[in-house]
Image 1 (cartoon, rainbow, N blue to C red):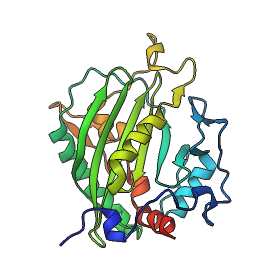
Image 2: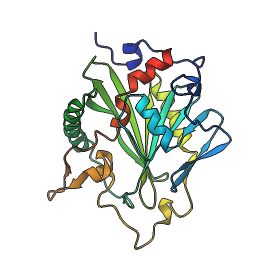
Image 3: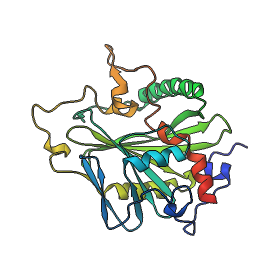
Image 4: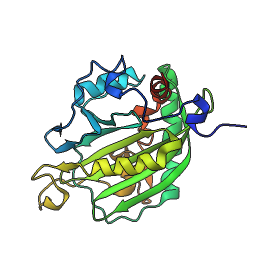
Length: 271
């Protein structure tokens, strides 16, 4: 019988008694910021670090992701729990103001994401990197008009060992772009971790002048809406028929940066 939870497939069980993330040998030399402190998300936002959370700046996030077997990243930031139960990767995308008056077609978006996933896997194979197959929604895109946050979850299957994992992505809209926040969690604890992750994101806020409500006439407006944002933002464009078309090797659901290293992450936590 195929195992559907990565925690089962890898024999991993997370507990509060685990070694703290910042003490794991390969990671302890990273510059983990701890409370009381405020992590800077470039010049666009700030993250208030609480007692149970850790933060990495852009340079150390790049090292952290590469240690997990991923491609190099720039201008990304990490938030994580001290007990290593989950971590999140935050990145600001300077693509302009996203209008939020669009109705989301989850079925059409999933079809486009699967096409992007196939093309992305072809490129990853050329580079000798692990591939993941997008199986469907964990939960479809949903938008909160009050917090200006768009979130969705996808189910992914490893082509190497058929283990399955889940990625949850949140987009936090701002005046000149948006923050992309990707959660990486053990699916067995995902529901709890998702609640904790959403609570942690309350510690993020745009700096004065960058809030969604501070948009003014004359500011740059993105050439797409909420639907294309699910597909990767600038990697998707509107066709003449009003649908969505991917450009070349578009990002695989915007979560590709953390898929490859998920098993190595769990293995380190087990040890």
